[in-house]
Length: 311
Image 1 (spheres, rainbow, N blue to C red):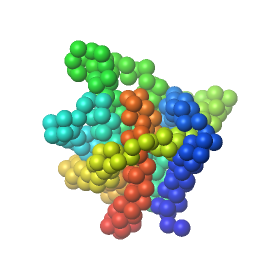
Image 2 (image 1 turned 60 degrees about the vertical axis):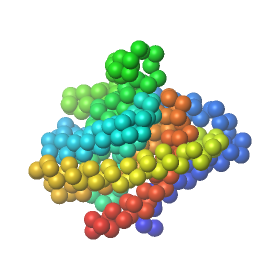
Image 3 (image 1 turned 135 degrees about the horizontal axis):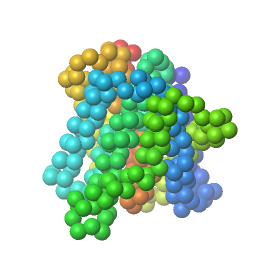
Image 4 (image 1 turned 180 degrees about the vertical axis):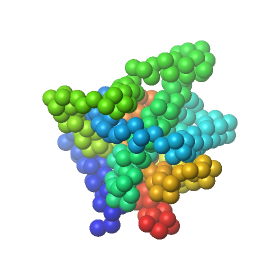
């Protein structure tokens, strides 16, 4: 079985399991929201703490590589905001989610397994760097922009500032701060404390994917989702790696293996809990459909990319 298929096939099967469980009536659709809440508040923070906290500071921060990955992602993020707002007149709630979908890769559940096969010596560095960029810059700003559209504040800017003020209470942000502090401290948690965190970590991916399938099963009008879903798909699988290649060309000192790794990670589909964020703004059906189609299409696009890169 090709390496990419061995990684993506389980993802498709778990999504399909959630879809048929809800569509058949075996699992109640409204309960999907509770599952998503569990992933965001418990399972994903455990994954972040273990992945980033177990890496050394030198693995997390490699100056040129960090700047290139940050620059490529932020450039596309800003381009999405400008085009989405000025050309397509998108509302802030949808605009933040769209920018997140274009720039935040599934680094943990697709990127890291790929790196472990293709570039095993660089896998941890790529995962830690991508998560640091995504969790400290891209996701917080995207959520704050979406909050600006949902806020009762008088102006979008006031809503955006309120969204930023709420970030310190976000469990994902808290887990990243705790992981970075833990990594820098050099201490080791006692086994009875660390073990429950490690037990929660592997739950995040399968439970989130099951919730995605269940959410898609509740969709009633798929035709309305085709146009926005196609735009986000092209942005994530085509534009993100292209922007990353441009940033890598502009930043000197990035080792060749990390250049390959950054491009491949940017070409991965968006994070698997993308629809969980969508639930917060009433857009879970669109974000679930986008994730489903983008993840399926990524099998073809990543295979073509790896062939072009000679891997």
